[in-house]
Image (cartoon, rainbow, N blue to C red; front, side):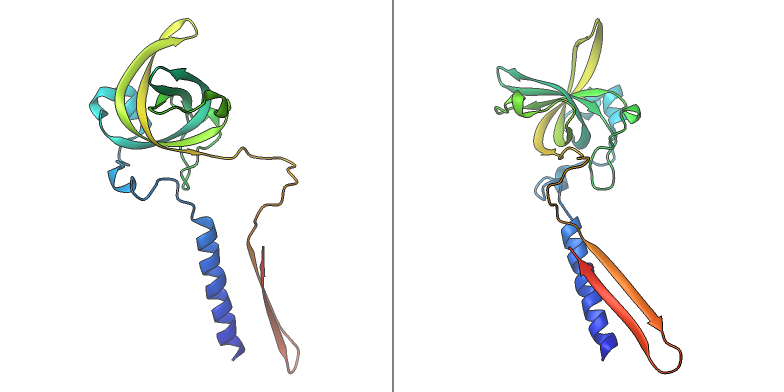
Amino acid sequence: MRFASFKVWWVAAFVLAVACSSQRVVPESLEPLVDRTIGFREILSAPESYQGKVVVLGGVVLKAKRLKDGTQIELLQLPLDTRERPILDRQQSQGRFLAIQPDFLDPATLVEGSAMTIVGEVSGAKTDYLDDVEYRYPVVIMKHLHPWPAPSHGNTQPRPRFSIGLGGGTGVGVGGGGGFAIGF
């Protein structure tokens, strides 16, 4: 009887762990539109060839500015991990890109260095100056913006945590033991 109870708790803990860890970055409505076969390197080399394609890109904000018809965010591209969060190793970047938000998005809310995952439609390229040289930026029109919280070191704010612990043992002679714990 104890073993059956143990299995029920184990299954419940597993379901809870999966539910807690599955945060959707790409909205369900956009998922069928996304072409995951297109990498940033391909877009960078020939943005016009991918015009109209919906892609998922990640990076960190370098700067943002208000345009007459929206907001432009310049991002340093970074590869995405399995959760579609940018890997914060700037040496892995393959370049920069511009993300255009057609509606007003206050540039003051886009903190330099903050990580973003963007679902956007490739619209071509824009040549602008990067320091004293011309740079050809791939441009995407944002369909969805997912900002990531900054990693905190020493943050004392309570955050949800999940862990599972299992224990067991055998006794000499008659008896035995076992245990199961879920912590939050």
